[in-house]
Image (tube, rainbow, N blue to C red; front, side):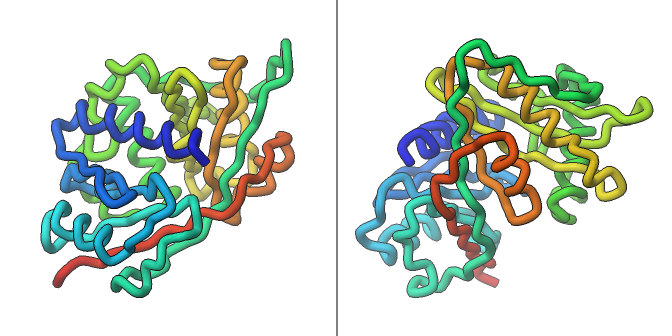
Length: 242
């Protein structure tokens, strides 16, 4: 799981720099808090020995009344004992590239390189993940303009009949490529759009493994592409202090 954790930590550091927000690492967990949807999250970075201390540290770190989420890729975090709610379980995947392999995305795509397309990508993520808080947040809450200054970041849009319909982001930390926020507009689902974008992002760094986390809806896509299943990842929610 070290590659998953390392990539997530590098991504957090990039967003923290772009958003000018705080980070936290203690008791086996790391977190980022931009006080806006999408960037109030934590991840278990090592098998947690004391869940109560870790959660106490996170509650102190995050602003008091807001909700936040924590991902546990190790399956060792007893969130319920500390008052968290089990929100979701995803599956972690890894793809090790084959020499000389070039994948055909099979679609029209557009690289996000300006504020307008960043806002479009945000809207697709908000709809695809059914996040009304993100939809109502000011533009730039998920993707600040300065995130494009980091050459490790790549965000693509799938275009259908001239209109953006899906998006996926990747982060390349030098050793692996992590896939994040893959989403499709509801009316454009089941066309393989995110799958095509994933192939295009895999082509950008053909000599390093690609990592992804998937809910039930898209796990078959990763298996079809030849990704190796690493195991489940549990997502915990702290709903806020009132």
